[in-house]
Picture 1 (cartoon, rainbow, N blue to C red):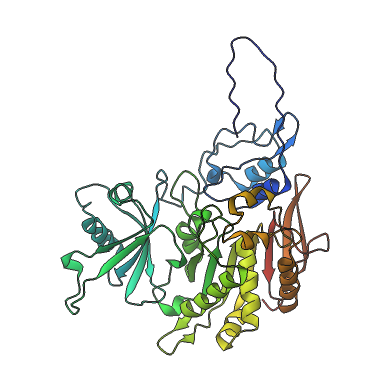
Picture 2: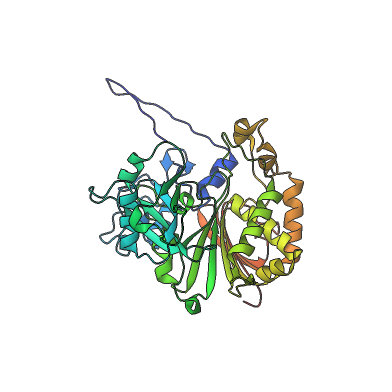
Length: 419
């Protein structure tokens, strides 16, 4: 938010700003969407949290500095000599559009795959042309890999849209097939995208699956502002080299959405996709790898509904359900949210019922919370902000310090009692 004033002589002005509860909850729901500029709440007249900020590079703040910032301490030092993230991450260029690339031969290395893309789009004489940030084995086609790339040159070359297809140049065509091979690019990131997959199956010990929230993006919702750093892709594989790290995208944008799916349908699609990506071999036998979920906002509601369906599903569903070892919820509105500010964008549209199901008095959410707590009576560690101070509690699934189902705006970690 900014206020611009043009004046000649000295003047005095009073500015009053107010917002509703959904705005405040969205403010505290971390990680924020890359397209959401909300940063700091107003605590009292005449004082802004973050008033003394010297930088907007929030990824460089230490834990102590974040605490000082959130608590409203104006005397914080926000210019650390050594950036905490930058020292581990090489991807720190100015932000550019991230593309998902599918159809890359599994035998190609990072260098060769980058050359393939440069040659395919006529960028081989431009340096640097392609920044290939991840290259992981495809979840369904074991002879292919999936990449995420950044390239201002590629972005400028492509025509308008969000999906593109390109025939591979001759050196990369298969001599055993008469059909030409293609690579596919998109920026939607719908369905599953692998960010990191251990090459040795014996070193693949567990899966991590991240889901974005309402109006979010599978990749962008977990990406830093102002550069191409994405912690699930660029840092987490270093900390957890035995994890297969996946993101899952689905259409939840509000404005101009063509989606007619309700909560059950979205959850059912995720449930089916999980069975596919966790199948092993041609016999479709399931991986017996534990799963850890990370869910933001609506992603948590979708995940709860998926797990409820799985608990009453077929053998594969129940096996996947039993293998869930933890869930990290960020700002999930389990008791609903004030949707009045968003209704104007969806009124009379196909996606209005989905948003209506998230309101405070929603029978859908009330029934979901009851079923989820019944099926998954896990340990629940909840953290939230209360009067500017971090507060936490340990209890059963879905219950916070008020004794009610957990309300969005904080963080909740769920763990099975046997974990």
